Length: 211
Length: 383
Image (cartoon, rainbow over all chains, first blue to last red; front, side, top):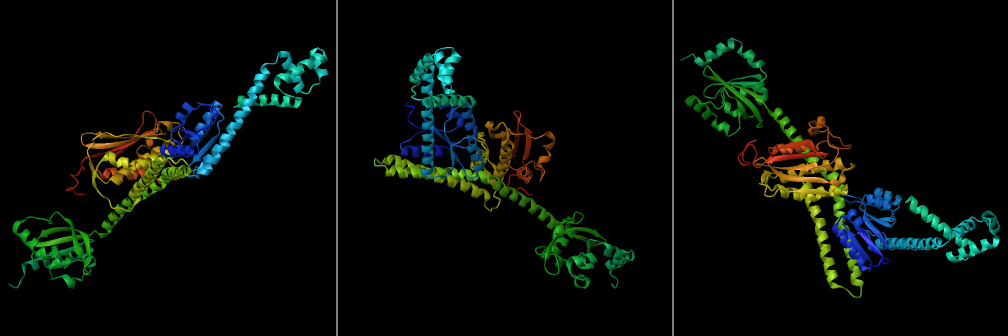
């Protein structure tokens, strides 16, 4: 299966709601996979799949909110759209506070749902592109020698070649060579680009540590 | 003969203060002879029947009662005198009296016979009867109040249960529209979409139908009830409530249960009360995923029963008796009549409602009802 082709996971305990949603998504050429419970979905969920999740907020067994918490626990940042019944608004608000993309009240206009699905897929796509970019940077960072890594950190901190050379007890010329190697290996053309690249890796690390 | 022997005897009684006794009595006292002619009629009787002594003394006592007794009274006396077989004399019974204005009323009549006379003592039972009827009416009303308040409590779940198919219908129809607009229209997909739309509309209709059955103004209809079927018929009301609280309902039906004679709606009301309590007991608890189990079963040789098993907070032993009393509730905003009314309904059918704690944590409420009513077979029985 091509994991870059968007997939919409549908989770609702009601068979008809699942089936009708799948049909609606199919009618606009979107691929959907429906599950009747949160547990069943979690069993089949593939975090590498480009996807979003449309889930009922109230279900027997694991509720939508509990599913959201479980996904968070797994560190799976899949965008979630909750479908709610009349009167569930306080629950939906709570879901939004916990990071759900949006909620939509049943019964809904098809376009409202499709707009949100497309928005969710765009968000997922953006996140995956970002992850891809960070991954590339990480791979590039791994190709640096220890000396080059040290020089790079000092450059990013804004130290001049002269200060770096003195601190490391090497010639300024040597620093310049290391620095050129770093720029080349990292594929960056300016110090500003290098700073952004290193920052995005660090913030990525922070995200996964706190997730 | 210039002296009447009966008159003489009466005079003797009178000399011993009979008259004072008569008028002091709270009950009506009517003295008649063996022809049914009223000889004496005390003040209490005068007030009760609205007759002055002049209007009744010397006339036949039959005018104090409505038909058919009125025409037959002479015959009653004659038969007693002939056979000595007492129907009222020395026994007393509840009969109907008629006042001067024609109004009838229930009265307790005891008759003694002495000196060839009959002395009737009558007590007006209308106030007592009215109080009993009022009491009965209030209890019946409480059953109705419980039924309607149950519906109120179930409203949120029902709204959900109707909203589900409506939501599916809307989505199917909108998908159908897109399928039609597609150049390569797939008629089979469209046909299927139309079919599921119809199915979902019927599903919403069934919820409303069951609801209307349960809520509508109605007479009590006692008939043979298939226990399992009665439960299946309200299951979507039960599930609506439970699902809205995130609790699954599991059912176990004992096959081939014998039918019982009862009003199905009343039995369903009891079941709804029990499942309602189960949902409330589990709503915020940690064992929601165990769900609620409804189990029908044979109990004893000729009884059928049902148990509602939850995994909620359970009840302390000392509350086990008290909770069946009316207006006892652990729920904020609860009316506290559900279990009291349920017990009353179950007893009407000769059964008993019980509570025991669930060994796995939580509660078990259940009842069993004899296949035939305890006091007869339902057709010849008298209440």
